[in-house]
Length: 111
Image (cartoon, rainbow, N blue to C red; front, side):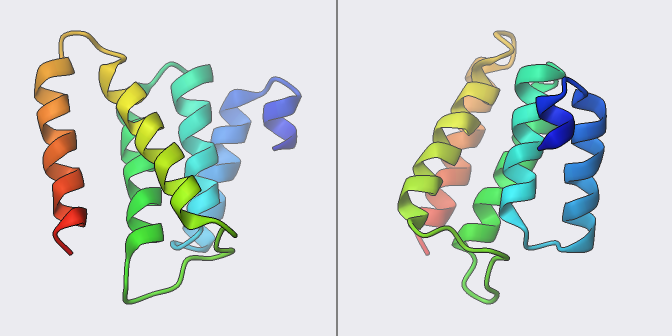
């Protein structure tokens, strides 16, 4: 988070991506990457992919996430909210993306 706090969003994004490369189940690295991509680098499409992957990591049944959060439902609801923000960032994609988001969410509900 140091690069992010020092105002170096590109280096912060690279660091979070590198952390995820080292540990594919590190959900927090992906959530932080998403925040930088979405809010600082204004790249909601890539942010959406990072958020979605973080959500998948926390909801998978076959492997444990790295550094699991103490309150997973709270983190999952925050991720869902941020996914929604990333989807609605581009008004041209809003309708299609909302449909995709609900299909994505329903696949987890059915499990």
